Image (cartoon, rainbow, N blue to C red; front, side, top):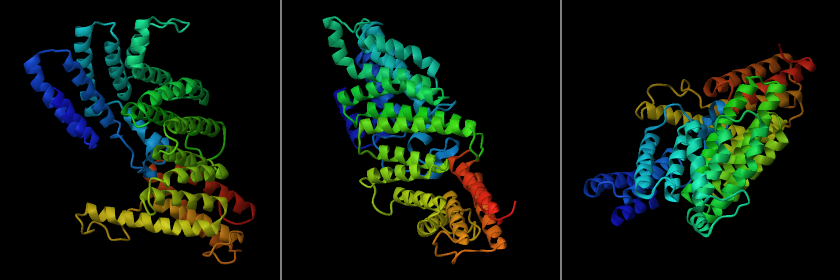
Length: 469
């Protein structure tokens, strides 16, 4: 049995979670035939459940800092991290989670049979099954499991916090489990999809305290700590989906847009604070701040967007080399912020490079899909990358600024373009905005942002007697 555990641990250390699970499951089949229902098998089932849960979270024990902005989807996160993790909460759980639940149920049955229903080790098995039910999107099933686990692992503390010597010993032995249970209990109200910023704020203190205890007991790189933050990321994703509904696809300010902004900001700021509490220099923190920059950009809060983007770059620069996909993504967003702010010169420089980068990605993708020959499409026919078209939209904003004569841009001359020139550029912007919305969805933050900036440009130019309705 020790050799089996050692083999699984070695696989985990190599980052081969699938291999580790395979080792454990193969060993469990052999040991079950030799030892029946020995309580030691409960721990092996528990470890298999934990590894499958980690595997399903998409973490794999670390984060390479990768992000692609177009993956934000309807919840508008802008790549990686909180926004995309909401996909974990789906109606049909992935096979890995189904297997995780099976192992966790077996671990609970064997442990309860050997040690009794009230033993702290049984509480730990309840905890693992509860966290898996949360990952499956079954919060109602998870709640009683987590509550029972917290009660058992807390050693029966009274209202005053007093506990017997034996209970204190249990708390010391199972303290990480108690902190994990408390974190997920505090997270429960958000996992159904937070509806208001006040609900996010109400969970803050309990989440922060539980996470701080987890980090103190296990360290910032613990799988348990990362899984807890992955669950919070899933809750953020669900909340951002509701924020998109609140926005209603409208690009103009109003009560729905204001409520969507408040909710989204509360969720993303909370996730950033939790990531910072785990590790002030982590790539995950940088990505969380990048998501805030996208949110602020889409709501025309450009100074805030610029500040959040600078903070993201400060953290991520320690994790990514120049020219990395995330470095390109940061430069692209800086170009869009510059274009929307009226800094045509900076916007043109950054977005011209960004457009070429994403156009090349689109060509490479189509060539790969055609078997390496690129025969399915000619270069001019290949579907554009969504960020290529967003760059086109930003470049059109730079042209409009130059036509106004206030941008100092290199591509638009000295300004003062005629109505026909303005109308042509507005048409370019509208076509690019429509392509972004088709690729990402009308409720994606980048689609909403483009619609907002197009409407603003038309209003400004029409006020000066240019453009067309």
